Image 1 (cartoon, helix red, strand yellow):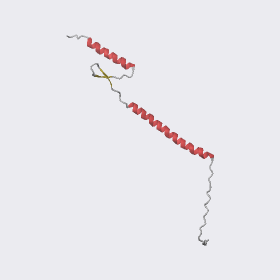
Image 2 (tube, one colour):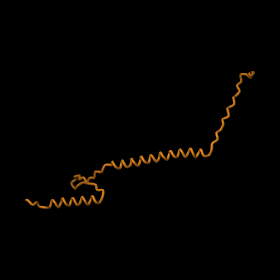
Image 3 (cartoon, helix red, strand yellow):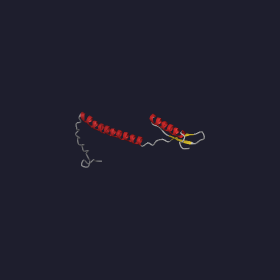
Image 4 (tube, one colour):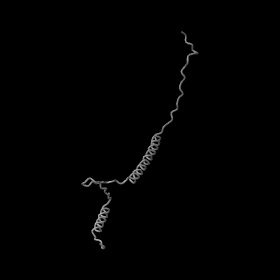
Length: 107
């Protein structure tokens, strides 16, 4: 078999790609931009989470506290947040008790 030189296909050489020169500062510049965007995004996320924490804490309902008596009845208790509230409640309770013990002037 004879090879026909006109039919044979010669591989075409690939064009030479000119390499662009990369400077060392491009790496730091590009990564600084990425990390700055990431840091700003995380700071924004932190602000959103802190605001959400305050909203949840502010809208949290007060607990219902109950106790049982000896015969099994439920008594609703009041929750006090400070000692001053306890003292005020005790003073109000004592004044109601004193008023109940006073005899009426008009029997």
